[in-house]
Image (tube, rainbow, N blue to C red; front, side, top):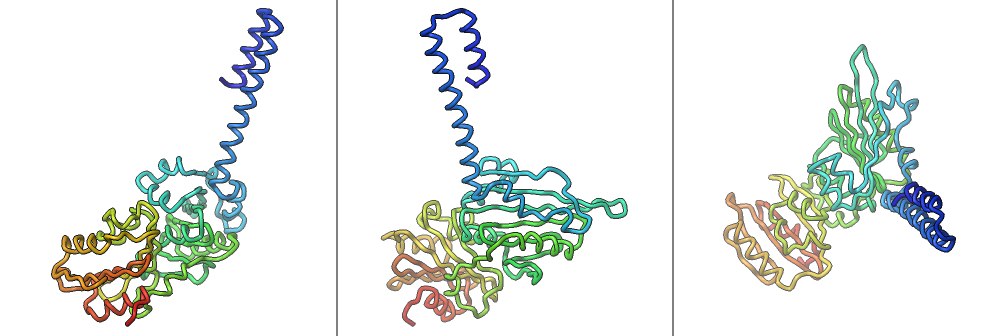
Length: 336
């Protein structure tokens, strides 16, 4: 029952001249209903603000102002999306954001008219739970080897019509329509300068060998969708990506080979047996020696698994067994 409905009910009862005791009781009850409803509404707003990490007004302060960027103007009202409404904005793509603990999206459209032709820039500012989550969702939206901009004060990649960058809790996507890359860079740099702090790159990535690593291929993998996106070998349930297992990955030249470091809350006792069976499903010449499991694919490239304590490594698609083992030893800190 709404407050309005409650008040109307109260007035009706008074018009019937009910007993004073009953009227007082009903008045107290109806007042209590209104108070509870008001608290629930306030609670809902508070939860939305908490999930967003910062108030909506503060998030809009991260957007470039019209007078800061040439003749570009906000085309329409700024849009906001929470965990529930994100599905309506990126239908089919929301789930991976939620697996990286998405909190809030602020979206704005800017436009300007150039000789009768309308140009547009769309900016999406995704607020994530932690800087690591923000880096993670940024990392899985790049392949490695992309061009970067020195004009943007944040870890970024750029293309002729799109710029992505990450800074603190924020993953930012900038899309341009009928405008040049230089304009997108200026726009993105204005947005990046409004975010205090810095881009956070996980220090664990320093454990990956530098030689032949593809720049920009570093990833933080969280959740089943990001895992299977990195490798079909990570689709098996025993890895535990639907629970608390997470991973870091890099790619290497030649042949886009991969190194993956998995971190478990508790490593399964049967991990070796399960990986061996999984390797035999996809690979040839599978052999197990102590904690190492190795095999080859159809073109003769090596795949290796090993583990130590609460961590495990996967080296995928390397031509030389010696090189594959060196990467594994460096990754896990094994005795060489």
